[in-house]
Structure formats: C-alpha cells, structure tokens
Length: 156
Image (cartoon, rainbow, N blue to C red):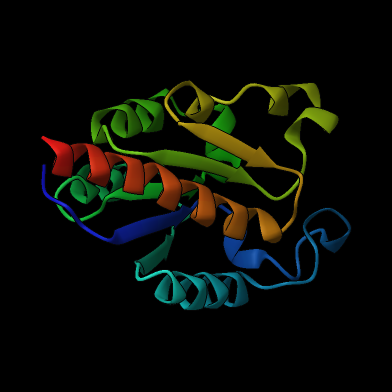
C-alpha cells in the first residue's frame, strides 16, 4: 500500500453556485471559500487537499477512477448525482480507500427522493445537515480513517 497524505474533495453539480443558490438551505458561503478553508485546515494537519467541482457525471467518474494512485481518501458531495448515479457509486467502490460523503443540508428532512443515497452504499460515513462545517467534520473524520490505515500498514 502506498501511503499518501493527499485527500481529494469532489463537488458535483450546482455546487459551483453555493452562496447564491438557495441560501436559506445551503447558506451564503461560496464553494471557493469552503475549499480554501479545507486546504488551510488540511495543511495544519499535514495533509494536502485537492478540490474539484464538475457538473458532468462522466467527468466526476473519470476523476474518481484516476484518484486511486494519488489519493489516500475522497470526500464527496455528489449533489444530485447522490440520488441517481449508480455509475458514480461503482467508481467509488473501485477506489477502495476511505470515502466520506457530505451534504450541507439534512437530506433526510427534505423531499423523499433525496433520502436515497447511492454514495452511502460505498462510503465509510456520511455527514449531512451541518452546512459548510460538514466539510471540516468530513476532513477530520477521513484523516482519522487514513491514519488507522497507515498504522495498520506500518505494523505489517
């Protein structure tokens, strides 16, 4: 097992509109600000954080497929693809390292179609309902999971 202290943060469709899109649900913080905060927080914890956003399902799947060699974990807010993309779930399942799913809103307090998450089937954990703070919670959580993997590797 290669040990990387790099985490990939993937944001799906419409998340590029954060801060402007439904601020009563998602808050007024931009995706750029969320990503900058994650990068700073990651550096404090000796992790490099790379962030990507795409409105294209195929591009997100290609990013996940390419992440296997370079990243020790993925944090993903798949947006609407959470509830529709079996293909994205399959790509994440292939990743085989820690994955944390994030949603800014509590998807279980919203419309029924949002209650189904294909991402949850392959993620180590899911964080929802904490707004932008959920990304920081996810980062702290995934680092703990990665460190457990690193310690197991060093023991062997």
